[in-house]
Amino acid sequence: MLTLTATLSLDLMSATSRDLSLAVEDAARETVKALASDSRVSGIKSIAFVRLNLPEGLGKLRLDSNDLQVFEATLASKGESFTFVTHDTHAEEWKLIDGIFDQAADFESYDPKTHPELKLFKLADALLFGQVIDCMAEETKEKCETSVRMAMRLLKVSTGEQIWGGVINGKHVQTIEARDVKKEITEDAKELLTFRNILYAAGGLVVILVLLFFIGRMFRVR
Image 1 (cartoon, rainbow, N blue to C red):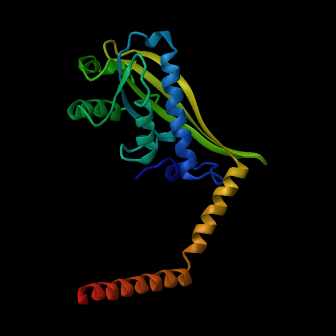
Image 2 (image 1 turned 90 degrees about the vertical axis):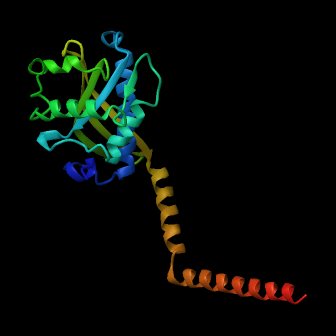
Image 3 (image 1 turned 180 degrees about the horizontal axis):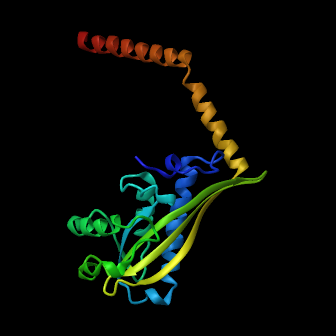
């Protein structure tokens, strides 16, 4: 399964997959905000999110990857003047759309003029797709900031033209103190799962079962 952390050579040594996921979630919120504030999108009532490509021709994020699931779910989570069409509906139309975009070698090579069939789609008024540019984590004495940068474009179905585009930056900031507390809790949890503690727990369970057995026999005798 392709994921951002598995496919990109990034400065993410101090960031966890959860930190990156939260940055992706923020990027989705920023995408919705940017679309909602642009007058060129005012006539659009429905948007179909198509895909996120990976940098340097590395392909695309799979639909079942955690990062893409988070991105798509966040897009659809907030009500605006437009709605998002997700991949769990209109399977046949999605296949046609994916087929068109699969012919593009990379993010920049797609040309809507060579695909007049785009105008025939009734799935949505516009198609949103983008490319992950880079991800990084910066750590200071006070905080760790994980960020992901994406280039997004919106194509109007009726004309095939690009009506909106923007570079979106999503980020997640965590204080070093909060990270240290979380690490301490994790270490404490690991210490509880020692062999000795497991034996104690198993012994206690056996004692409880024996007691319940004898109590049950006492009541049956009466």
